[in-house]
Length: 423
Image: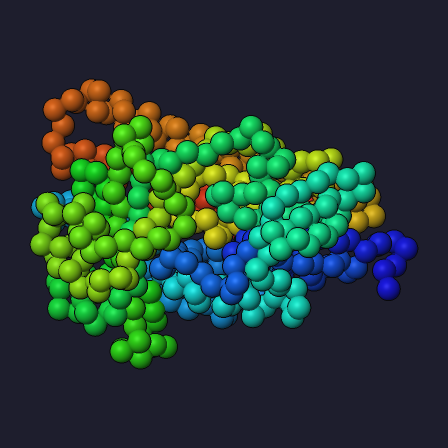
């Protein structure tokens, strides 16, 4: 039974992605908290192909008790190339604060399985598509497409870039197609084994209007050769104002002809890899993004946004899973911190004070990099493709230049807040 000091707190988490599952793990560990994850899919499955797990993600997975269940291919070297000529633009060695936190490329399904297995039984409810939220005097009423209704004291919106929760608390906020289309697939690693410079490394092949990315996603010491997979993420970029037809942020089927048509002038090795993908395997994702939210909370401390719902940047830093997991862990710490002194509303103020400035810094960084590239183009309008690609790669930042992202230790962030609060 709930104690007088800590009355029962009913938390509804919308979305069963990494952010939702990570939040469920962290929040369910608190006393007198009833957590339910509502996922719209009929089965909990991850779409996409691979995902990058770096120091920032390893640390929060460790805090959640899921790190030992995730394994992939060590990305100790990353090579950036001119996608047309094959010339190397830049080679980077990954920064490894400790060997145990070595960056890896991992199958998305493995990350999801690790998180799902750590969530307490009975918490996840499938086939629950949220249709509306209603702000009550006490709590929030959630209505689902199946006609059911529930009331929660706190709603955690972890429902992605097209967040229904965000639409309700910030109805004027909009997202738009960025002009980037990503084609994703996993194929047998053996199918690209004979293509030079491809199978064993993490490569980016940059072109005039997009890029090809390829990487192994399995630990060869743990996965048999016949089961090892190779990830391809091929991007096409256009002026979004010229886009026609409907766009989907989730994976829709794409034909081989459509994908390969964007890479006809690329290095033969890239075209060779693309030719190995069987018909019917490609999935197409359109990237959406929106302006920064001034606050990540709403409705008098009854609703909070996490992950892509809170910062619709559409994968700009390749670390979205880490951000979402960090959000959930910090939310749990804030609630734990204020159970006896201010309650959930105070917890959400703390959460917002920590995470909102962090996301603002990301938006500012992207604006600065965009301005930098535009200035370079204006200064040299006749810049060659090779030089423009070198400038583009240089603008990426990476783990060394963006240590506040990739080297971010969320436990230290929380400790710093607590110590600062005491002053």
